[in-house]
Amino acid sequence: MTQTPSNNGNSSRLDRIEAILERTVEDTSELRSALTQLTAQTVADREADRQDKNELRSALTQLTGRVNNLVERMGRYQEETAFNNSELVRGQAMMTDLIRQLTLRQIQSDERQMQLEQTQAQIVQTQEQMREMQASILAAQERQERILDYLIRRSE
Image (cartoon, rainbow, N blue to C red; front, side, top):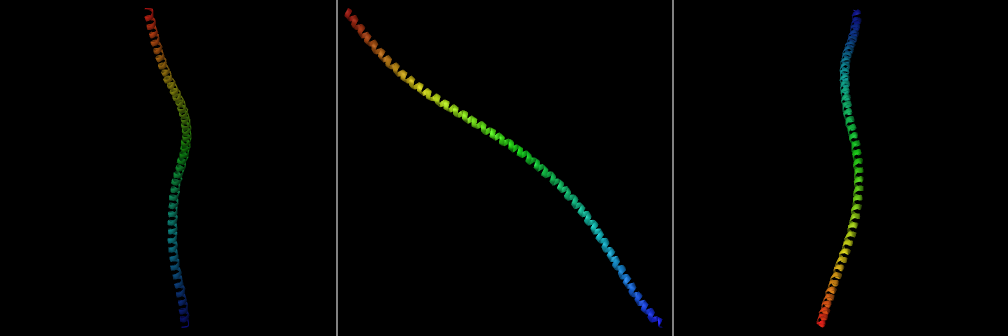
């Protein structure tokens, strides 16, 4: 009987050890399961991160292409603007030159108009003088005719 309590004590100790071992196995099993789940989640997260990274890289490549295209277009726009500005300046210079030429021609035309008016005034004055001369000649002819008539009558 003395062995029974001792066997009983060993048995309960073994039961406790066995229970601890079972809990440890269960805990290990749960930890293994949790580790497997975490590993699977980590692998899935890494795959998602890799896909996100690839998508971001693709988006960045597209964006870089668009930015490069925009920069190229801006460069062309600046070149065109510079060309258009130089054309505008050239056009303004041409317009200024044309205005200067037109102004000179207008001045010359005004001078010619003044000369024409002076010439017309001289023509009118000359015509008036010619009328006066014709009137004077007519008067002289009439006097000569009267003198001639007088002389003819006297000689008869």
